Length: 288
Image 1 (cartoon, one colour):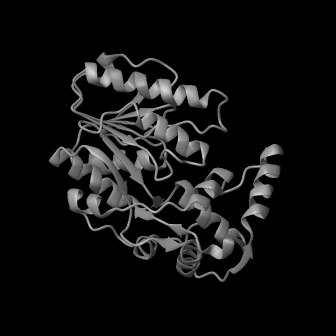
Image 2: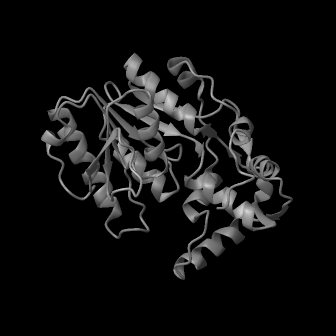
Image 3: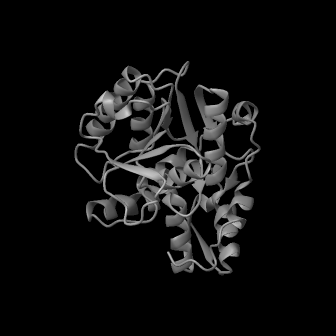
């Protein structure tokens, strides 16, 4: 098994998870991690560089998590698309049986966010008859966007709430996501699946779940969408980074809710609720 982007939030977890299950894991990483597991082989990987099929020889499964954010590189779109194309073609030539691509719930034809548009464009190069496209909701775990949100709630008492927090969010626990991939490998599942808990929650509810787990009191301040959007535009022009980005805001505004019943049936996993996934984390004692 090869996992690209294996020094990122999801990639690190998947490498540890599958190695613990006895899989032979090769972690394709841009930079070598400070702490390496002795049972994982770490291989240098750059999306912007060609991948020879010999590097994939003997591999049954490729899990492609690597992705460059548009704000991190002026050529991010080109690198993400061509890099995935090169990896995919090399995998097919090397006889890789299962190619798994991490997309997003924001990826669809009418996507407002640039991130969603790019993920959807990359999806188009894959074959859902043989490949597996996973569109996870907000991943609940120690990292990614969830960590950014939790860290902000930990540091701030006054929390802006866009459109009174009525927008719905679909979430998935990180360990449920890993279980889906394990099931996909054993059952040889292919297709395009949205992965999330059966019942979405409002942003207000999610903030409350997190603050309760942290044992913190917060004040939610309703603000209109246009005001927050303008703020992100100004902050972006000043190159000031925020825990939640305008891309996240646009995805929230679209508020497209996916039907996950088919994924639950096919993968055979009953996903934890957002509240349960947050309850299982140790947020009260973390400093983010």
